[in-house]
Each structure stands twice: as C-alpha cells, then as structure tokens.
Image 1 (cartoon, one colour):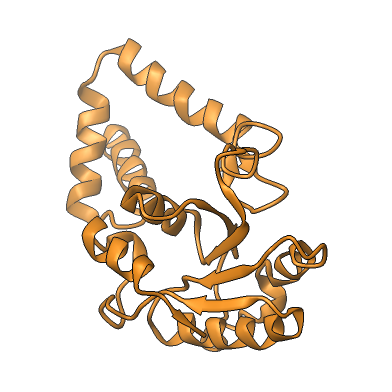
Image 2 (cartoon, one colour):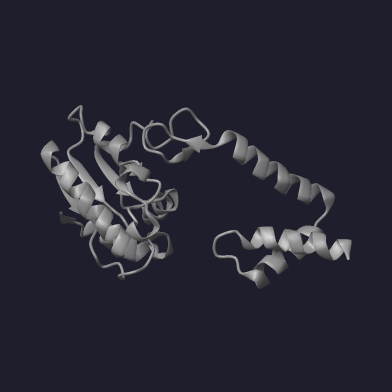
Length: 198
C-alpha cells in the first residue's frame, strides 16, 4: 500500500506539468522508476541545477544562466527592434523560425480580465523603460492571436504611441485561438515577414 501511495504521489506531481495528462504522467513515473540510479541522479541534478542557476534576464525577461541573456548581449542582434512576446516559449518558437534578428521583451504573461491579470501583473512598465533612450525604432507585438493576446496588444500599442516608434503586430496568418509555441516554423516565419503596422 505504501508503494502504491508513493507511486500515486509521483504520478500526481508529474501530471501537474503542462500538457501531461494522467496516462502520460503514469508512463513517465514508471519510466523514472525503471532507469538506473545514475540516470535518475542525472535527471534530479539537472532539475536542481536549472532551478538554482537559471533566472530572468534583467533586460528582456528571457531565461538565462548569465548576468544578461545571450540575445540581449549579442552584438549581432538588431537592438533597434524589440519583439514583445507573452512567454519565454514564444521567444523560443520565433527563434526557431530563423526569421528574426532583433531583441525581445518577454511580458511573463498577458492581460487576462477573467483571471484578474491586469497590466500591473506583466512586464509592461519595463518595456516602456527600454524605449526611453530612443535607440528602439520598431516594436513588434507578437502576443498570441486570441482574446487575451489581442487585449494585451491593443493596450501595449496605445502606451507605445507617444514614443514615436514604429509599432507592428505579427501577421494574422496564425490561426485565431492558437498558441505561438504550437505553430510550425514555416507559418511563424511567414507571420514575422508579413507583420503589419499596428
């Protein structure tokens, strides 16, 4: 009975991961129990290491294990363009498209009235601070093409207008209601190429 309780606790914890249902959680739990002690130790160590060393970039709020992320610190990136995304996984998706050479700003969320998430809950204030020195010429709003993403885009667009920067929104070739990190690279590449002034 105690073995069953411990296994159920492991399955329950794994099932809390995004996109993992009960059956997948059970498979993962049984896999973890089947690997060698060394493999299990490497997995636990990797999780612990990532948790202790990875933090948010103080400039763009991407994740990094350096003082500033490799995108913000790169001289090969166009720092006059900022692509605003909701989550780090959206940044990863755009990077995979290979179509964008600027820098990013990760909001760490979206405006979501139904769940009481207001502009104060996301990194909008920090985005505005980045525009104060006049180096930024274009802000690309790449929030998800759904209700909350659209609300966030409209709100951010209004705040950006007084800065006199070009404001664009990624093209809506993305299906309405989908998440950016689930979109294939070709579609995302086209959306970046065909972005429109906002």
